[in-house]
Image (cartoon, rainbow, N blue to C red; front, side, top):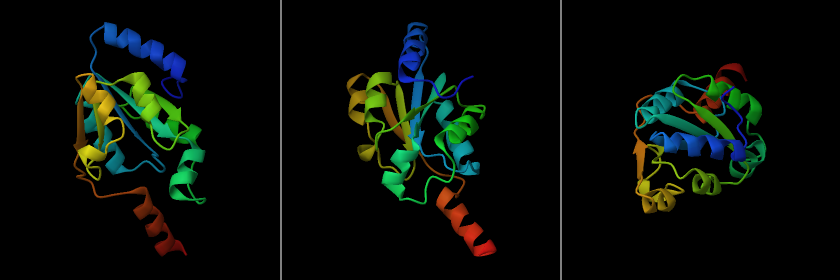
Length: 158
């Protein structure tokens, strides 16, 4: 299985991958209801390196960030869904509001977020760039979000 790695196990995997010269790409998010925008974004993120690691916000983290009505799906299901996508190599959960501590542990070669994030606001940028890595964002081509899907469902069914 390639999902729900604990940080210790993931650290061991990353150490091995780096010793093999693999380029590590990291991104994070809630990934609550997988949609075409996520798949497009993750495919482009994977193209930036050899291994794509995803950090998923825990349920508690999402509630703090987005309110009591989210997430729609528990983090175990979100992790399973994301891990099933072809571009994704490893998935882990973080409980903090940001993935800063996880990024500090991984020290990816490439840190990537969606086009709605300006590069200077990407959490962990300092860690990655101090270690010679790249921080970038990927413009959204597919205009879709979980919030817009929720609104569409409410509009059509309520």
